[in-house]
Image (tube, rainbow, N blue to C red):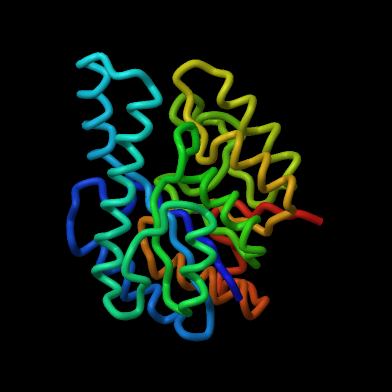
Length: 235
């Protein structure tokens, strides 16, 4: 099974603790060599700090995006270092390079690609381009909610959504000033377009992420009977 895994920067690199990179490596290594794995890393706090400075000195948003992309690639290189010989040695810079790197039969880890695309969007586009079997978006929240749960205590977490429903929820959330959705509208539209089986979940514990991927490959359900995060069904 070919899996594309998006790991938010707030999950793996928020405080640049090396143990976070090692723990993700240790957990995901259990998937090898049975499954192929492509990982896209986010920028986290370091990216936000650099971007804030760039804005303060007059950089436009495209320049800020390029700076953020460089930070995501640094985070990718750190995770590559953690995987050692099991990983392709350099973060691919394009989708085509990622496909070529995948032929090495090693774990491929990359960051951003072009301005205007979040880690989620890169992961969704990459999953479509590579004809992946499964997309996992590991974020700092435990799924998709009906409303921003930080603002509304009555917000409902969805166990399952269709791709079209995901697009509608994400767009309505994004339209509210200051709101934050666990997946961006472009990624949601790509998931809908390519009908990609996807789970959006809390990625704090890499063991839970790994277990989810194993369950997907075996077509089994969690022991608890509850699917972690929100499953996007593309029937």
